[in-house]
Length: 253
Length: 253
DNA sequence: AAGTGGTCTAGACCACTCG
DNA sequence: GAGTGGTCTAGACCACTTC
Image 1 (tube, chains in turn brown, yellow, orange, green):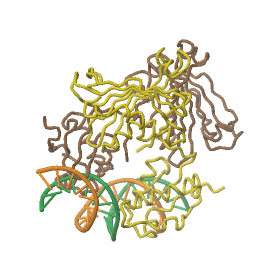
Image 2 (tube, rainbow over the protein chains, first blue to last red):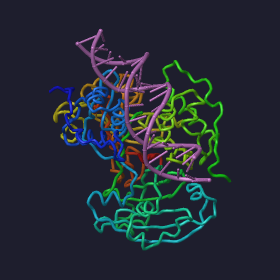
Image 3 (tube, rainbow over the protein chains, first blue to last red):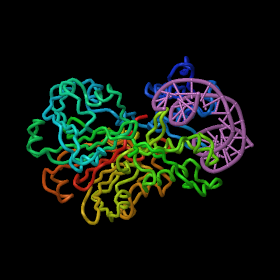
């Protein structure tokens, strides 16, 4: 089998919308990604070079290049100078994105539900104040929630939010994920820093999650920032490791 | 305090090397990153706009823009159309990069050592064959190693490599990290897909790591691909969660 | 209206890999 | 030498935010 056979995608690029709000490079990237996922561009196959692809589509090279680069950054393509661009081997997996557990579960076809265990306004201790970038002792919203998928408890989530969000109500939290609520208020999470670890469950946690005592837990600490760079949320979450794990794709830059 | 005071970096950009092999956008990004880390550009401060920065430096806008974009992708800066570019709040943490545990430990000032527990050539079962993209039943190199930092066991690492690497010797593995060895052979890891989870330690693992029975372990499965998109390595690693954790920075694109 | 980042063009030269 | 991606230029127009 020719492992580097040259594949020339055809009129996969029909009907590009040059006037709409969707950037051209994004449309190109979408089509190529689709071709990879559908198997039209099999693993290891070579992609047409940037220049000729641009000419065929009537686009400038930087535009085509950006589309390809985005797919490289996603881990779908690999480029080598002097050689060309190839589809990476191995099945394509969606990596961790900036979504909450609630959305992860919804997307995978499970029915998420939330039970609020605690909900109160507290004074930030020094650790929380530092994470949120507020003054120690200032008021923050604290919540502790139990997240279930199809009525099986998956995660215990503790979250702290700056005072400006203290009007988020318990009833809202019962119906929607935290990130959904924030987004509906016009807050866009742009950057999140996560630390993933493991430890044994405490007695309380074992009871909440209905698992055996001393069970292993997958833990995540996360600080999320909005598009002005301000901390919006700090969370400490514990997951049942048999029901949840993190997938990450790393790309050398 | 003016949270969005406009900061104009000065001659931080002296002595740009326009003829050397280091790209200009990279040099610019380096200087700005340094200014952030050193506190010259404090959290929340605004960066000079792209156009005027380019003019002052005698660089085109796309070049300056790329430098800034790289820092946005790293989670150091945040941009808003019509507003400007700001330094993200919160202390800057280095995220997970494409390095091995060996390098992680070295960099943090610890002295890594490796003990080879098993080392043999085996026939790939269907799972390993799929991960490595080879035929089931074909020969692969298998190793099981214990990694210690300052003589304390941190991790048990199982790795499988395609036959072309079966000449990697035990003595090499005793002296260097796996990624170091691969790099010295001209293999560049370009993409890696990781799955991070947790579980209880087996009796054997408890003994190897010298931890209590039933302790929690942080686990990672990883498939790494080189710059031609071929799978180079599959690994299943277990870490002592009190000694190691993963840090990830996510950026909305 | 002024200022910002987001997109796009149409070229140029270079470094690297291969036959 | 031919083909590839990597870098860089010098503009252009647009969308969005703030005043």
